[in-house]
Length: 66
Image (cartoon, rainbow, N blue to C red; front, side, top):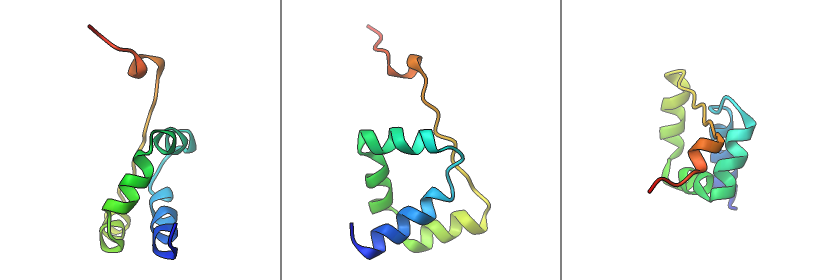
């Protein structure tokens, strides 16, 4: 990761309400995609708007329905 990506990851981590959700997003590769797609300005808007994310994962969210 570049220095900018590390900085963005740290800012995004402060917007997450649980570490388990971060680890699950990271496992899926989605956390990195999120970091890459947001700018520093985007993250500052989240911070100034007091916006948090609560990624939840449950067994039901991993099941497939036919």
